[in-house]
Image (tube, rainbow over all chains, first blue to last red; front, side, top):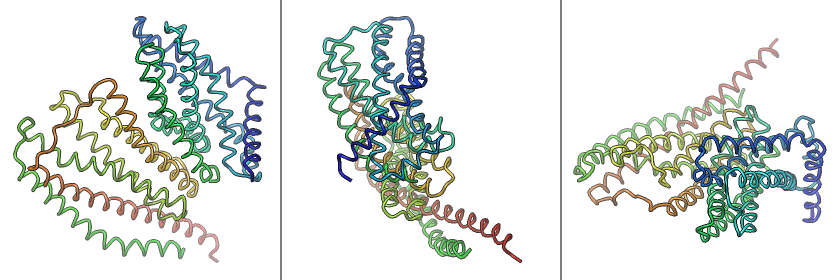
Amino acid sequence: MSMRAEWRRARAIAWKDLTAERRSKAQFNGVLALALTILVMFGFALGPDAQAIGDAAAGAIWLAALFAGVLAFNRSYQTELDGGALEHLLLYPGSRRSILAGKLMANFAFVGAMLAVVVVAAIVLFHVQVPARWPALVGILFLGAVGLTTLGTFYAAIASRSRAREVLLPLLLFPMLVPVLLAAMEATKALLGGNAMSDAGAWARLLLVFDVIFLVATFLVFESVIEA
Amino acid sequence: MTHAVSLSAASATGTARRSWFGWFTLVFLVFSQVTAILISPPDRDMGDLQKIMYVHVPAAWMTMLAPLALLAFGVRYLFTHREEDDLLAAASGEVALVFAGLTLALGMIWGRPTWGVWWTWDPRLTSTLVLFLILAGYLSIRALIDDRDQRAQWSAAVGVLGAINVPIVYMSVRWWRTIHQIQSSPATVDPAYVIGLRLNAFAFLFVMIYFIRRRRDAFVLERAAEHAGEAAALGGLSRE
């Protein structure tokens, strides 16, 4: 199948997932509310000291996105599994990789939208200055969301079809995400802190490398995962 | 039924050879440990505490080697779909987890009197801990999936990605640490200790190979028992 047809398939799957989400909205609102709750909890954990809260803002943003994202990733296959539709999806001609690509795009839109709200909320709640280089911050959020979604979507394909999926997905996903989250947190922290601009650039490049490695690796092994 | 018999027969001949190798490994391990402890002088700063190095350092090396075996068997399974590769990958994962746990525990026992803390966020320590967690995830997924093919396919994918991630985790943690503070490293090793380390590196390599093969044998026996159980259940129905 041609590249063009694959792209059309991937887009169709992403469109289907996003349409189902847009019509119900239940999931996005719930996950977003959870992410904001986690931010507030971090505020309590780190104490009323404004300085400590400000320093921890970058970490809180990414952990809130991580915990809330896990729910979204598992749900992303759940609708199809409930309806027995995954088998049908697999029966259509073309490469299985376009299923991953489609799911990836839908989840990315989901996580990206959530992250945008979470960052604005964190800037308000954690007394963070909006950085002068905010386009760079958007770039970091983009790269971090790509890494988070890539591994999340891939491991959800396994975890959502096993017993104890609520435990299995975080157990598989969190240790694998250490490099991506570390780079994303450090780059965000450097940008929000306003100092050490050079750090942010170096971490951003590292984050880009991690994204590429994990994108390639997951696309290579996805076929054997979805078929089993 | 024939399948079950051939599996157990194959493992029976293998077990004889393995027990010979097992005794050799045990003797060599004892020899290496005793030699290393006897020939090395007490360390100037650490005294006899340094002797833990002969277990800790080889264990740490095997913690790096065993995931490579997991990666190799996992990749081979994804290409060949041979059950043997799946079992060997599973055995490698288990052994890697044991060595990672051993490395962490021994490192803590050594670190407490030397550094004054049980734990520091050193890149090697941190990436070993993350590796331990990745392996725990790998073994959990094996335990949680009942379908044989599904378990083999998924755990191969999880194992391969996990093994690929080990150097990436190390790199990222290292960079994270060096930006905040200079990495602390134990003193470089004096020649007087090198022989002991070399001997024990081989002793631990043999232990690792022996463990992986032993666990693989155990998996084969478990499979054979499963097959025999299924065959007996089916035979009970079809018998006149």
